Image 1 (cartoon, helix red, strand yellow):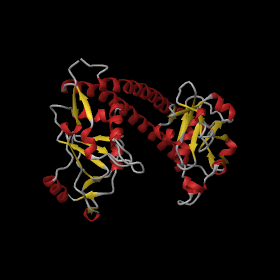
Image 2 (spheres, one colour; image 1 turned 30 degrees about the vertical axis):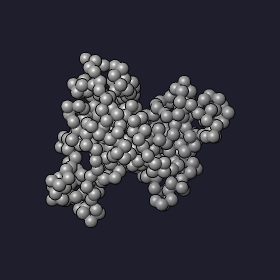
Image 3 (cartoon, helix red, strand yellow; image 1 turned 90 degrees about the vertical axis):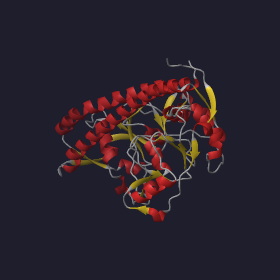
Image 4 (cartoon, one colour; image 1 turned 120 degrees about the vertical axis):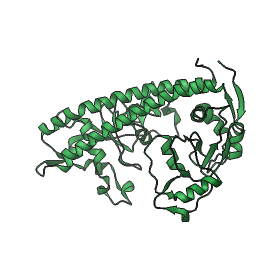
Length: 399
């Protein structure tokens, strides 16, 4: 392993902000203008759309006077949601709002590889360093002066590139699997809409979900009594709405667990594998399918399939994903208005068994692929998260 050297971030890059853009300068089309929330989405490699643009002429003027983000520059969220970096890619052409984002530019390539710095900022080591210079309590913030003082220990650049290559290859594979799953789910939703919404038969019988499934609601032990909660994987996985937002079709990972004593003491309903979940409080309409015995909080309903039902879990999943929950209440009051009884009273048109069977035979291979991809994503993520701090600290080296 090469000798590692200590630098301050201010020694390896210019850390600054952007030229302020006023609302009067926005146009209906032109060069995209990103705010911190769009940069966060770009960091997650989601498809990002913005409603804000500046003219080509104004963009060129700013570029000549102040500069614009260029390939391998790094943007970092610095107010509110802190410490999410975005590495500017080849061909990226945009401007951004100052204040909530900090700009790492003119990175010294003789000292640091930009991809390595980007990954370091994402690592636990980098996050800890950012936490140390964070100011404010009601509105946490990272200042340019504070960021410049952060110390970073770096191997020689070729080793940095090798480390970044290993970790980036894992990230690329994970991203590819996520995109495959998104495509497969989109195919299933499109087919569902075509068969069961666009070509729905008026003669199909309608039944309320409460008559088709055993619908239960989760439960939360008293938060003040922290001994009921756990981060030990040997305890029972306890699903939150946030967990459902982080998963795909199938949920197999939770941030928290409940002890078996908590399950017994508070009679928390146990959710079997292959059970569809629906969030119906605060954040409405998140849907997932369990992969093992799990638990949930009281903002999540679970639909236990009855033994004689032909409505397989993936069919209910697609029904709930395409259901327009706005029809249950006014747009302004839907979050407050919906309750478990309203969930039970949702009506589902029931196609004949032959059509259901044909649909199941068509989509089963897609959902099997989604599930297998999800398992591979979990495995690769575990490998990456295990390697990352060891590579970033020099505990593990790459020849």
